[in-house]
Length: 381
Image (cartoon, rainbow, N blue to C red; front, side, top):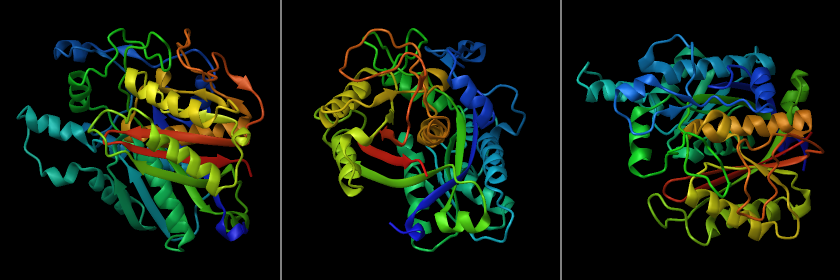
């Protein structure tokens, strides 16, 4: 592959309940700290489940919290990438709920708004107004796989020459609407503890946050003399079209994604060092994901871990934030562990503590309602 077809990652930015910058975020991931808390306002509102991961001390207009999360993460990523030229920028954003606080206010009849100003697409438009170098933007409402969809779109736009800098990521502020929906679907953890892949897991914990990456062609990064953090090699997408919320029992859609990435990039199974798992802590999702990994990687077991016990499920931001962790794991040659994992149910290799080891190739996984499957492949430079 020529340098003209290689996609470099040159900037990272994150805001989540664990930290509001990538340095502190990475350091916190390597501890046993978690941002899960029991929230009094959810108790007062008579929510059945009151544990969540929410960003504290973030002062902004609550109705545009997603926009301000995005600005904070994008500013950090742009600063690291040193994007100060007159490059043509593209924005590719994934989200599940958009600015859901506005809809909650409307439902409570506190205020009346123009609903179109609080969608995911409206976040894109506000960001484009803030950053005039953004000439094109797209929004992906593909739920919990949205960050990976944004990465795929940004990569494609760069390869087609439609943009020279791609700002890609995902955002979702905490949503009481989502909290209600997941509660009614019995997906929330009754214990208030997220335990992905553990035999005694009992559900997910909702989070919030934003994660953004700066992508550009490798030749462009070299020309600009900016540091290349890792490479985005590929992204595979599939759709089960099986059930609105439940994963396909045979995990065939996820398996197809794994196999496509391995085959199209001429990789052997033993070349994958780490799988950054979707790992929500729900019964069916974890079972489906673990089953797919077991079937695909039966000859070689890469490490598998989830960061959701630390930051919660950040919905449309999840795979974007986990993409950042994938890059950081390559940078630091360290694999984060899965907090709260104690009793094995599946035949996969899940570290209980951080693992200092060779990290050359990472798969970042996201699966969403509707049977949407999205897996990205990252590698070292």
